[in-house]
Image (cartoon, rainbow, N blue to C red; front, side, top):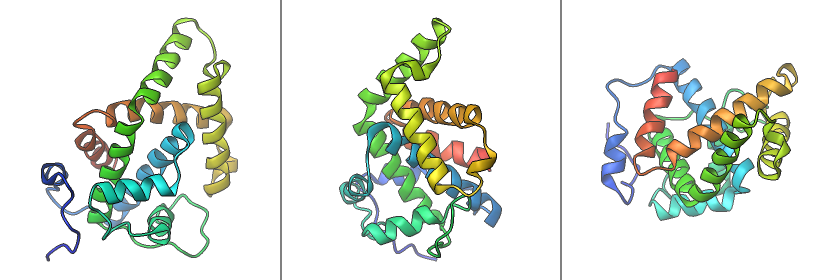
Length: 194
């Protein structure tokens, strides 16, 4: 079956995101959830919104997948962890690949901020101090937690400590995804977590 998705600017990046076999529905659900959480971390740290995500799709020539806010919202709503408001759709592999490329494109754009946040996290760990004591990490953790609680179904069942651990793990992951081969790392991490 031929894909209707136009090849992104870097065809090599698209080819890096190949599959040995198609994921089953439960694997796709896990991939959807992970992609949305990584985007949530980027939103919380860099303050990006749908406009930045749509611009990244445009930069990467992925408008056929993420053409407007509604298409983006429907892709994000495909996360099975989200509180549903009726817009849930099934995510296909091409859409997952597109989101991987968009995430890594945005992470590269905000690499300096991501590096600064991770350096602060390391510094806090060395000093045996809580990460939220720095303005950058405190704001990130608060924004991440608030947004998670607002959007995710099971948010009341997750402790603040677990949510902070998730946010900090995603922050470290973003550092890897902001590197030149980040799209491949994210893709392999998604497939490995399924």
